[in-house]
Image 1 (cartoon, rainbow, N blue to C red):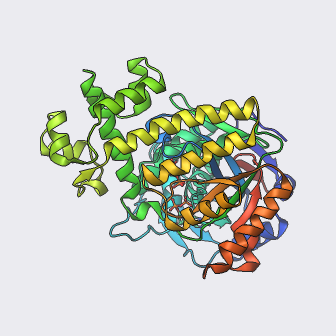
Image 2: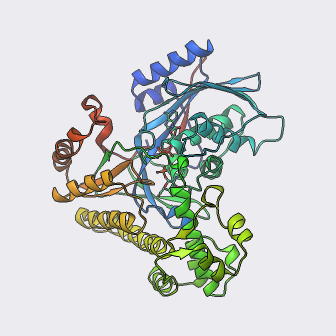
Length: 468
Ligand code: ADP
Ligand code: NG1
């Protein structure tokens, strides 16, 4: 079933049984009934995603190419008339909580401690409440069941935020289309502290079964992109977790890109305070990506910029620098790598364009693999967001003749690899098991299919009604 309309699809429980294993659905339903002593009135399913190429460029305004994966956040819900959010999880590692609708307080993490899981849910709720007139917010009973590996670059957090946004809009009878929900979900996930670009929430809502999506910004659009029929994408989880909200690594990269962009804009005599995304600046300069790269290469000459260097170039005072140009969790930074980050972003944007061209024209898997390999190299060297375990997985793949790259934010998490047949993908998976997973203390063979697997593009978020 393809769903290309901008309206959220509302299906039946039968439809949901077809896309989810019934055991998972039964466990969720039983958990909801046992906890709340009532039936859920509806379910929401939101997929995780794998980004094929275009890493760390969404927040710079450049297009990306993700697809939705089979793993999802599935939740059961019903409206409550006590104006309280009752939030539970089928996994007992995630503690239950309650929160009055007018007392939502999202806890932004400090000192490398990841936020409690329900803060992501509350981000989504708040995102919708912000749009509703005061006093109109309805409460909800919710039980969440997730099987996207958390903190692994497959976007478990955004699937959770997006599921909360969708469930909250539904119980409040506040009908929104997919692009609006994706925009709201991207904005409200920033309440957790990370300055993401919107790719995860966009694919969560706009994914179409059977194809990847070419996602562009301002305005948000998703164009279905067919992948070569002999291309098989394998995801392998390094089993190294990286919670993005617990450290300043992610926001540091966002800030470095914004500062680099502002310095380029100032050097071009443009109103640099209005220009924080490379793509906006490139548009203002009316130049090609290749010319923009040459411009950045000419202006951003230092390997390392100090605070004083940047303050001097931008002619701002310490106060404006710290309070307008940094985020709360990047105020401590002393050194910035502007040149390297800019080069990665512009070159990665070029690779996305080339990947899309190859995918839709010649369909040559080897050429696609080469671009993925270059992407990983750049993420490791210029963007410094890889991890030794991701590099090991990519090296093992390379030696086996398979191209792979880290996917998602990095610093741990998953790689995505491209194989040219189903047979070669299963040989490759065996190779990874032999050379990597069997040596990993965190590998549980009984869970192998969730750790290293072939993935196919799935549909986006949907609501499923439970007949009463
Ligand atoms: P990812 O790359 O998976 O999006 P993040 O670090 O951004 O990684 O977010 C991971 C966090 O999302 C987890 O630490 C947890 O708080 C939350 N999360 C993910 N999956 C679930 C789930 N099934 N139930 C509850 N919370 C979840
Ligand atoms: P993950 O891997 O889900 O943390 C993050 C950002 C994306 C994008 C990628 C890197 C969030 C919610 N997501 O993804 O917007 O920038 O990193 O390409 O911040």
